Image 1 (spheres, rainbow, N blue to C red):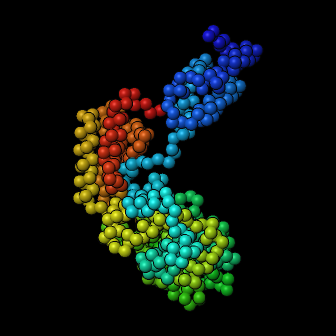
Image 2: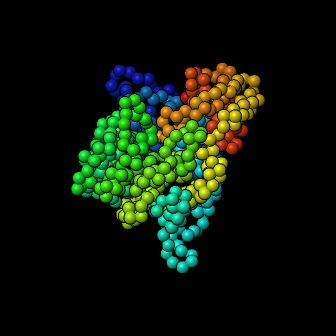
Image 3: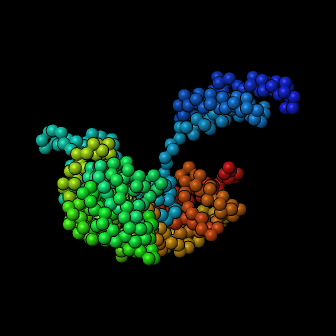
Length: 486
Ligand SMILES: *Cc1c(COP(=O)(O)O)cnc(C)c1O
């Protein structure tokens, strides 16, 4: 291959260079026949190599046309074949993968919120691989309702008159407002106009559901008289939103749920409580003082809404419980169909709720509750176990136990810090940010956190078997000579 003339400021020469480069881009067939592709194994469907080779050669062409710097090496068949393999493999790889959560944040929204219990996982697998009674009544041999699987169970567990489960709590809020308040007014405190994770904002949900938002009080103080003064013939709902992900402290006042219930009764208006987290068992003994579902019903809320995958510890879902007349209006609303849950979610929710028949069983079997109620001693032992394991991998590793503070996460219990334990890890000749990156980019990513220049692996959020998997990950980092992380 003769050398290609280098760029000159001369227009004509430059276009010659471009032409020559374009001409030298390998043909698709040549790329596909390159040994780099045939040797890369039979995993990746051939169509993906073809797609990738086309894209990559086209990108080279565009770069040349734009006048970007492109040299002979960039368009060599070796380079293009290698890039083709890399891209085809990346396309074929699973995007959603398992990770090991070493952040200590139990309800990590970015890491999938709550892991399911063993039983919930088993039920999901059964539902996934076979036929089932989703909408079939085996007694009568006729069509049944998908709501039947959960309603009695949720009523038994919560003591509510009626229940329905939908896709998530955002959908629950939307359905509730649309079914009970469309075309009319919903009164909410200015201190409770929450935003949850960017896309869920109470005022926006309200608008979408066709309700008119009537704000009362101020950010820091809302009294029951503020609600009373705004009630009109057009009022449909008194809404209370739990400020799940922030606290307003200092010079504050809010109307209690009890006061709102009394006001609602006096005026024949339903009180809807968006609880967010859906804590079923009181965890104040463990330092978590979130309101419980039962307390909300006990206070007299007509409708209570909460998530399935926050402190309940189940799959993504929105649970709506409360008075029969209101729930049946929601069941019959067209949005109920749009927001309905599938057989996999029903299976996981059923298994999750069943665990709550026995408090001890729930705390033991539901991973989120097990993590949040882990004792300091248990965490310290787990951390020591991890530190010993990592130290035994190589002399280059320094691992020591440190006492930390863990947040609950998932927009729950803001300002609550649970005493946790972590392992601070150092590896000779690898900087802390680099080590964090290498662990995060492992085939089985290990997600730690950096605190004051230390890489911490928190143990509260570890699941069975994770200690060994972390040790294997670290071993592979040590064995990878170049530790290439760009
Ligand atoms: C988390 C939360 C929601 C949204 O719930 P998703 O299940 O994530 O849709 C709504 N309201 C409150 C108060 C919340 O905390």
